Image 1 (cartoon, rainbow, N blue to C red):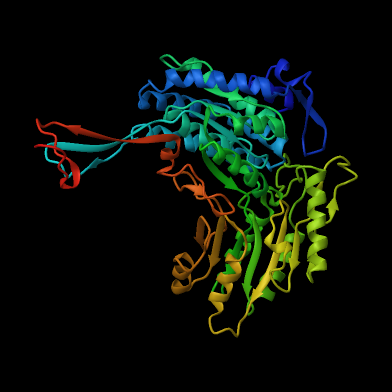
Image 2: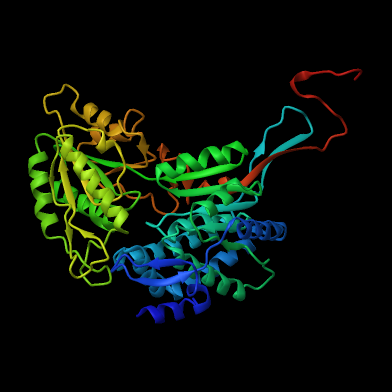
Length: 506
């Protein structure tokens, strides 16, 4: 399936991908694959206004009918899974299996949201007043702004979009300026779903904003945007959150991770080895759930590191479109430079680094392929506590002689500002339960004998601490996209007051 056939399958006509001022490059070889048209502050405002108009109509559509539209979107994604998955690979550099997996995640969230469309329920609340009933009700919130990053160019949008639509809200989406084509493709697939819908669908339920920082700022600052859901780096979150809070709107933040794995003496090292390789090397270490810190017990650290170095030496590196490749390119030169700077700092802070070299430069002079890096650190130094989106694995040991060695490991694990995902490998039930307890991991996701993956559909993917505290795609996540009201109904002929208060004559 070549690029032209992908564009044709996804209805990306020449007008939307040619002649624009923004060049789109594939990380596979650094070549230009499209030129798209940017938005500016004025066009962003117009699209937000159009979304606001759509909200007035869509909120009146019954939620199960809104769910039907998302069901149709899921069917379109199933029909065009290969084309969209390949476009994800072309635009983000993920290996093809991961590109396809991201589209499957979109399909799964559509199924999930369809079910939720019949479960947007409130509660009956006991009233102290006789002849009265209280209840909570949930209503559509308004325009939802979505900002997504290059490393998950379509799945993040779908988590938000599917739930926002069934909750009665339009979406204005600002994708990463590095991955606009996949966003435009999603818009085309949604338009196909709309065309198949048996009923009225207002125009402009989905608006796309293409551009850099100024376009994102226009979305963040617009008072008509009731919710801003932003996925990306902690640095980006620090800028978005205060601006949205200043106008008392909502944020849903899922920011970059600096995720860790504790490997205890009882761990199955073969299992841990596989988990480390996938989570640290997959997507060239550029996932928000990538493994960056390995905290291994001193009794098994040397053996585990030796295993990992042997595996790393044989990791197939190359074009993510090729069969058998497990490590594709970094996103761009900036990502490569950031990786090299981090490794230099690791050496300066006493670490011993293996790997991390550029490869395939003769074959791909304008792309950036690297060998995965292992940095054995004397302690959890300053660079280890920072996020770097690259295949870097920092390895630390925890003390075998400590009275509470697991407590030491957990303290090291928690001593970073990020709090997205975490895991422990152990066959000791007490250690596993302690890691999951209130004195254990302080991350939004805590796993046992599985890497720092996302929580999958229904599991409320999100983080804590600097990672934002936002929760997406979980069983209760729909409440983020709706507003709550409390209603009291008096079905008696009297008007009793609460707390036994009397006011004037009875």
